[in-house]
Image: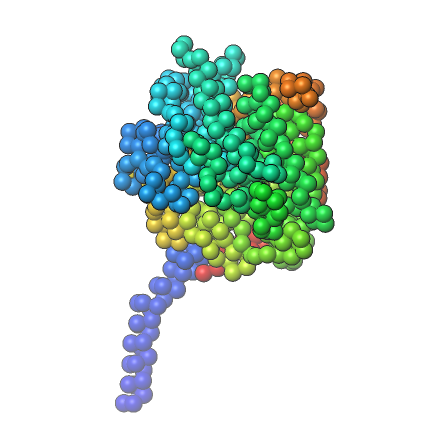
Length: 593
């Protein structure tokens, strides 16, 4: 009887295990097979062709995404700055708390989202709505507001948008259709000029030529305002200020912007050749020695190259080349992308270091750093761009979004929110233009699907408050319309004039389109005017800023503009081998449970 009792216990136990534990084990096994982590599906890597019908479908879905957000802003939020997509209402400045810089740095009570979206309407071919939006801006927007705003944000989001829309309208070739209203008389340029004058006050109380980080649009630099500014904030004015100077024939704006760039250049570290994250406006002394490619530094490097492309000043290219060499020498870790050695776990990635010692300062990357792959495309360093992109896309595949900060040592996000930033999408778009590998169309479709699933709300698309639980924050930043949805649309719209004539256009750091025109290329003389310079030949202005490359050549420490490709792979294959991608996936913990 005793043996039968034990047998009965074993049978009952096996039954319990088979009914409860075994199914869970099978589910876990299946999820791992299918690419699930923590009960969240991991996006599969797709390297098959992207059918034309599917491309057209996703182009339309990207267009619909833009209009869902744009129409909701116009209906529920205009003339306020932003849309609250959960409550279907408008968002303006936080007048009750002037120190709330998370809101007040960008929101100036000047219909920010409408201005930021202007050239996106042109890109999508909606001439009638573009003209209506321009009319709304001229009727409702005024800079006679006592708003204290961040100079950097007002420059890239507002000044850049106004200049872009103006230039698109007055282009006699009308590449985007008849955008110019009969009544238009340079009103947007006048608004841009007025804003530029108000932003110029940031330089007035600076003994070093570095702009203060914030100005009040009524009276200039705030009393007792912070004198600490970031490198990107001080050094990313030259594109918009330079255009404004040329359009109104006043060198003051560009001269001031270039002076700030020169101060930053002169204060780079003599050994590493790098700049820090923040410095004091009055002393030009670094207050944070952290050097990296992300927040606080990103667009400084970007604008050195783009300023050269637009204006042709060889000094800009020289500075960029030197910084790029230092970045690849000190911030790039792991193997070079053309040095794949099976069995070695040294996946390529970028780190933050102390610019004075070269030692790693921390183990996180931020989502803004995803822009760097796109910049590498413009440089022509396609091989490195592919690896940089793969790192950030691996994080996206894990969370269906990008956490604001991710620790690659602990393999966990440390700042959880995702405000629908465009940088990974921008790099995806530029890499597709450079390679025409349909893998990047699959990446774009994955990103679009994720945004629809996790960010869509009642009246638009919300900031993802946590990439873990996908909870929402009731805010849709203006760059969702100026960049995120625009780059997705352009990725799938192969016949868009921006893609057909890629060498004719440049994107600002806010995604605004500027036509590259020989009339803008030149240097200011000592007499207040400026003289044209001959176009400086480089590999990016033959047919496109991004080439369709075929010959195998890689160079880790690229310090000159070049048109190099990764080792030759079939056009439909993955851009890296499964083993190389597996290295990167392991670095970010993609498949850890």
